[in-house]
Image (cartoon, rainbow, N blue to C red; front, side, top):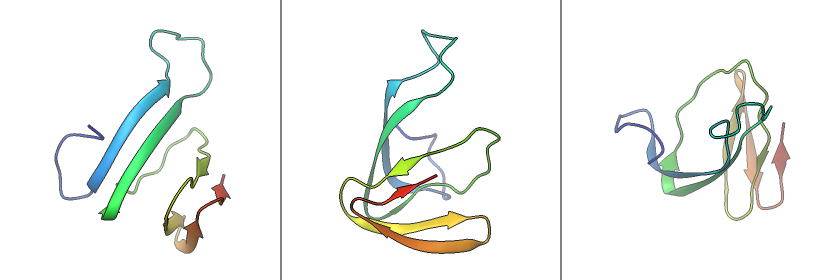
Length: 77
């Protein structure tokens, strides 16, 4: 599961590929997300950096207060 059931996200699954546990010295995580058509992830702010690569489909990413349409092959940092 992506997170505990809530209204601020829908249709998201998350797979941990590389995570802090069991390697606490790893300075990053690698996660694979799938978002169903009409689904969305929660909006949040983190102190650590993110890189998002769109493998298939399209959507909207929010960077601060600005939104940008993204699609297959796009990478957002």
